Structures are given as C-alpha cells and as structure tokens.
Image 1 (cartoon, rainbow, N blue to C red):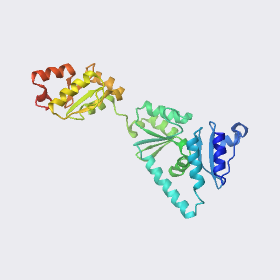
Image 2: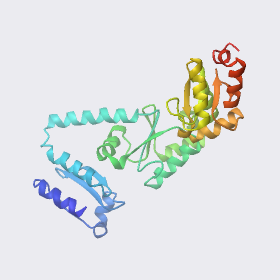
Image 3: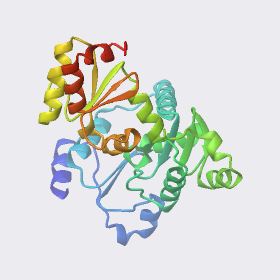
Image 4: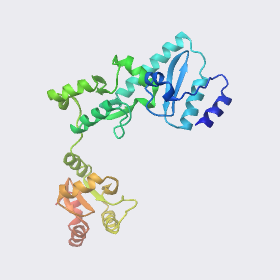
Length: 287
C-alpha cells in the first residue's frame, strides 16, 4: 500500500498524503477509532469526509480520485449535497423492514456492542438486514445527525429508529422486542408456501432445463410428455429446504412431486401412475 500511496501522490499533486504510525500517535488513533491497519482517513477543509479500513488498493484509488476531482463546494451546493445525503439515508433505513446499522457484518461484527445486538436479534429469530458503517464514512457521520443518535449500532423498523443496544436490551426484557420486529419465517411455513407455489411443483436436483441426476431427468421427461404446466425447485441450492422437506413430507428421497400442495410421490410412484393412466388426471387436479 506504500507503493500505491506513492503512485497516487504523483498523480494527484494537489492532494497531501501523510503517513502516521498508529501506535506512535495513540490520541489520534483513539479519536478516529483506528482498530486495524492500514486505515486511510480523508480530510477536506480540516474536516474528515471519508475513511477506508484495510488494504484495498482499487477502493483507495477510487476514493482518492473521487475526492480529488471534486472542486470547492459552494454553500448552495453544500445544501444540495446534504439534501442528497438525507435522501440516501432514508432509502437505506427503508431498505428492509428491519435494518441494523453496525460496525462490521452479522457474520463478522467489529465491536462488542454490534456483536451483542446481532446475538439478540438472532436469538429472537428476527429477520433483519444490515449496513456496515465502516464501509461508508458519509453514512456513518450523516446518520448520527439524521437520527439524532450519536452512537452505533442503530436499529430501525419500518424506517423508524428503535434505538441502540441498551434500548433493544430493555425491549427484550419487557417482551416488546418480539412484537416490534419482523420474525424470520418458520421453515414449516416456508415449505408450505413452496409446495403450493404452483399447482404442480417438482422438487428435484437441478431444474427442468438441466436435471442434475438420473431420477430427476426421468421424472422431467415424464412430466414434459403430459403437456401439463409445472414449476421446479432446485434442492441443491437450498440445504434447509432439502433437509426440511424430507421431514415435512415424510419422504426421504428426491425428486418429490406435489399437486396443489399435496405429495404425490417420487419417480417410482409417478411411473406407476403413468402406466395406470392415472397421472394426467392427478396432475390436472381431477383425481
């Protein structure tokens, strides 16, 4: 990254590049929440306007080019920029029914408060999306003003601020959290919806264009010969459905054919029904 910085300094002579050893200036590191190196901070008119955590050369180049090319902003343009940011923040907090603005991701939280928040939400099976505030300094600073809430994490439901970790803990203790936040769909409910997605549903390995096992290929050929419309679900792309449907239907193998949400059976059953002349009436819902 030193080499990248040197090249960028040559390209952008109007930009001042400074390198500090984080451990040598602990007060600076603490003020700007430097938790890993390298971290790049961007300043304009003595104000921090952006940051980049980690050794990401393409992203660093992009940010330097963007900020270096922007000319001095007039007061009127500054108002427009603020309005544009507010529009963006509104879109972000409404991006999902439940939005968590945190440090890091649910898989890799970058602070203890964010980690605790994720654990609480997961414990209550709450369906949420997240935004890593470390990835966008403009959002990180702007949301504090927009929401009038100075710290992170911040939890929003239906575009409205619920609060930070302490508020969520209080809601959990009072039992209100379960009523406020949207729940993750139960597997059984999801399977019921999937099996009823179409009048004729086939759960298979692959899809009707490309079957990924011999049994699935044979059942596709039989269904195609009937001329009946049907939809497929590729169990190889969703392990939860693949394992859950075996229990839901009490049928241990694939493919599985459903008509109007009811299990017909696997390949052997479908072959028998075809030989007996019963398959077409069943697929049409006549039997």
